Image (cartoon, rainbow, N blue to C red; front, side, top):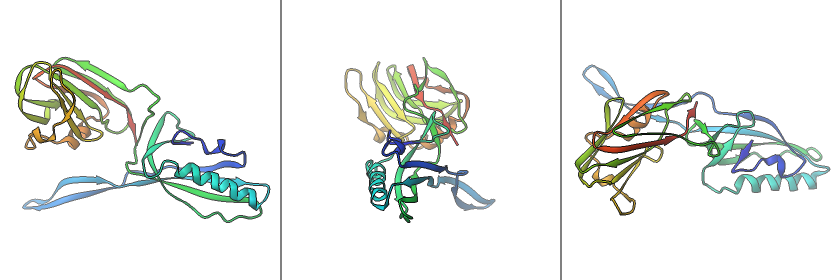
Length: 252
């Protein structure tokens, strides 16, 4: 496996990986609201998960084993508190976003020990590696995106607009996004369904955040992401002159 681009076995010949334990099925928490006809689901929160890497340390003596343990700690802690790609050994076309949680204390017997390096996965879903070209689709007022994997995708959708008063965007004819205000010919709107952020680029200008222009009565960015489930998904915008979506397939 690799974390932050480094395979721990390259740190020292005395390091080997005994086992990798990926996350199990997704654990989610439902938020409900009591209604006249029973409980109504109003939201869902996906819980964090863990990825455990069980590592064997084999040194000639305890002193060398401690030095190896130090190398391991430096490797795992190098990313600090930021999430970085973790690539499983036996599924090397995908990666998880991972943050180091802990390294268990080694119980040395002579120069040998086993430690667990435990990573927290803020989102327990794997996706195609950065090194693999992202998938893209382009159209005019609508575009069909062939989403693979086993979980919904989180594309970045860039829409070039004609002159209009406001704009809307839909997935499979269901509106999930709307913005207010006037747009000039050539203005661009970027909907980032991974970061759940929105930017606008006026024709000839630069990108700027535009969440304040969203019509929240018609906008549901999380629902828009979840609508990008595997299969042929149609992204449409009647005010568009060009729609471009780019994403990486995601896997449970």
